[in-house]
Amino acid sequence: MTKPAAGRSAVSRREFVKLGVGAGAVLALNPLRLFAAEGATGAGATTLPQPEVWVIHDADPAKLMRAAWKIMSQNGGLGPKLDKLTLKVNAAWDRNPDEGANTHPVLVDTFLELCRTAGVKKVVMPELACAPAEKSFVNSGIKAAADKHHADLIDLKKNKDLFVQKSIPGAKSLKDVMVGRDFLETDVLINMPVAKNHGGATFTCGLKNWMGAVQDRGFWHKNNMHQCIADIGLLLQPAWTIIDATRVMATNGPQGGPGKPGGPATEIRKPEQLILSRSQVAADAVASTILFESPAKVKYLVIAAEMGLGVIDPAAMKIHRLEAASILA
Figure 1 (cartoon, rainbow, N blue to C red):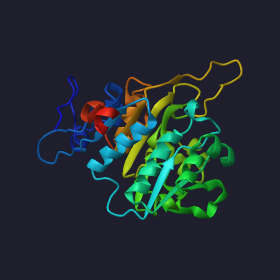
Figure 2: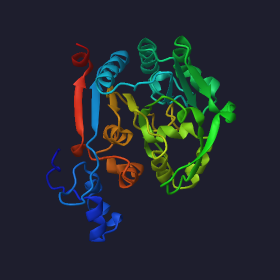
Figure 3: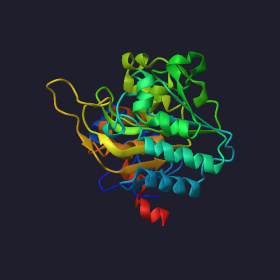
């Protein structure tokens, strides 16, 4: 088990309660200290498991996905039953692939090809787009990838009968939600978001990507968005989170494009990375460091960690930084 980073003292949740200290007071001192993977020793101490995160680098999105698939295959794969796989991409915006608003279509194309090779019988891709789906699905390049591999790219705005109401025990704001049925009734759930700046949520990635899985995203905006984003992690827990960080919108998110008239142009960075983990919280935390010096800058990540949904301190994770070529060799 990894030791805490220098100068950081990990505290178990039980000890934290015994101390009688409010979470806000501790977070003001060090926003990550409660959420390290190792905790205190002694009887009754509680800890979170140390998550593994893979950060894969290559300029070719197809190679990135093939490398990620190999890692997944070596670490439990997709599971024993492959009749139905639900894939949540980001296909919400009427933008072309280079603008970084949606999941890169080459990643989707390659993933769907590998699914077919692995014997997955059916892939469904439900999405509640922000822009008209007939534009965002096509211009993102994702519809072409879905059609090529006979996957069902579903416009949830036009298929409201595909939602089911679910309560979320333990949620603080998003206690009930109308969520796409396919996200719950599936053999395998995969989240493939794109990492980018977000004007309202600071940063959008895996947890935030579930906003395209629910019927009423407006509720989130009006009822503590950061808490809602954390709350959905209690309900939707993918087998793998595969984060597209091939190019990252650093400003003007989530839509990007030319930006506001007279305003600065959208800044696009090119990390050429794919970030992979079974822990969606850890994956998001690592991805957030592309834009911020600390995951603690993203409020919903701090809340998710406080709720026990995962680890956000990179020093408490097992992070593998690899070139795709070395994985595929």
